[in-house]
Image 1 (cartoon, rainbow, N blue to C red):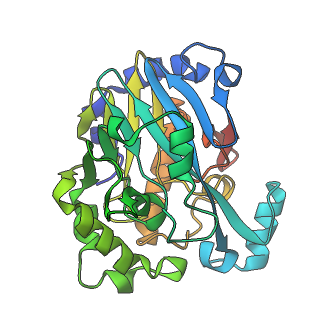
Image 2: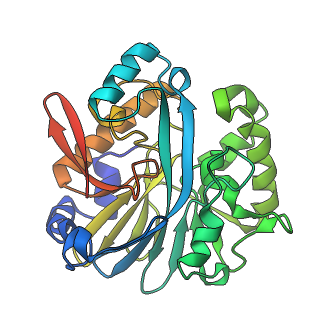
Length: 320
């Protein structure tokens, strides 16, 4: 599965995407872009057409340079980060969880890390309540993939069940099968090594609630899955379209605000299939730049909202 012409045209025509870019440029349903959005330290709201988007912070994930960029030296990685205005000693990625409210659904896309994965994460639950949401009102939970910082927050630690009792839980069938394979522990590296056992356990706890879907499926009116494999075999991104507006909620298809754009061919340490991930990154960057579709990036700087433009032989991320 991958982003290609067939996938995109099955969801909506290229013309519709291009027409939607003008409406999407406002990023707040015509309410003046950033000035029209509601923001705080942990909650950010904006609109895409008639769809209401809420971004909720789960915290900051810190990765060693040698793990994040294993194919280059730490000195080379530090130089690129410093040139991009970022600290050069480690990768400090935001974790931005999205909620999409349409006329029919309240859709949570990924659930943060919970409290068991990494220091600095696990803040989503409290921020979710401060944003005015109740677990019972979530109608669908979509997992872009099953890495801990996207999946582990689904479990209520008080009863080992889902936090969202009324929600349909959605994952790609390829992703589910990947994490239930006997050799999954051997396929995960670095700080994610323990993810195999932990993710299997959590998937077992919610197995009866899971619905398997495929890339190209529309999971709600105007909300569709795009196949973006490589980071994990069954990774999907979520495309939101409404009243001519469009937004790609990318998951981990693009993971760093400088390197993923300026050095898209660099290997990202957590990617399970590095070659497929690079190919998917390049296709996604091309689509976002050509079609002028805004990106909500799970690991982009808070609140994760921006655009992609071409810059010389590569690309540039522009926060909105």
